[in-house]
Length: 203
Length: 144
Image (cartoon, rainbow over all chains, first blue to last red; front, side, top):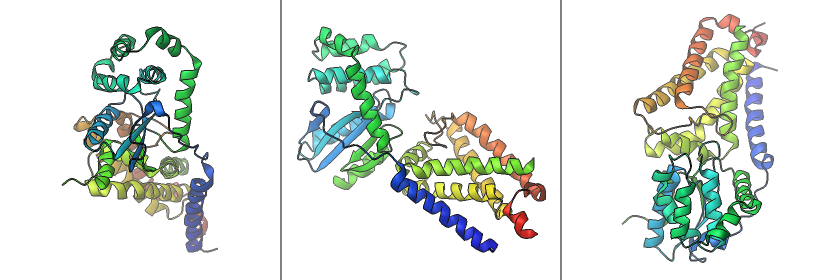
């Protein structure tokens, strides 16, 4: 076989290997069932956003504030649903903040907890232990503290978070914030703005 | 010895390219955006195209096929990475992971700068000693 033919063969085999892996190599994504407690907005909204979030990631904070602005401006057009994707190797409070959020959601107060959690992220993020801040936010959000404490130590809440993370991985999520806007994957606040601008062009 | 170095350089690019290609391109696009270097309109094209360049450069370097060209391409890639990571460090951009190997390996930018600089020097060295670097290569087979 000539050198030219070997070169062509190598190129074709490499492209085929990548294509085959992309088609068949990944774990098939599980369905993204809606969790009512972590969803906000009109269920019939034309822009459905699923966000994989790590509450300690600064870019997630920026993205969350941006989404809130869009939701305030277009209340009938945007629906947001959050899924947990704590980056345990990067953020010390990733799991604990997700646990508090999940437990707040189980008391029907997910968003009441979420908004101050994101607002105060720069304050609690550098702390060695953020539990006192989370507890304070939980109290202000009106959570029943004994129910909250029982929930925090339950395996069930942690399992829900891990299930979300497994789902994210099966969809190719590697970092946060990752959004699925009407099923199109978008990573980071800049790409979020670009994508939302296609639905809501700036006048 | 030099052939082994050539294969190691190739493997670094091969693994880096493959990892990015096998995960959604949006993940690499996000990593690229953090370096704030490319014009906004070019980022997506680079995020889609660069992993293929890494993959083929790595593959050809490992196999020793068109070795001189593959090593030149690797040299250009590593020089580019040094510039991109270096400017991010100089501008103190808030990047804690380089994004070079996707989820496979996490390296802080300083470590990447050292790593890429070494690989760049290795490429220059291999090009200067090309006949020895071409041991165990398809080029050597075809030159017989």
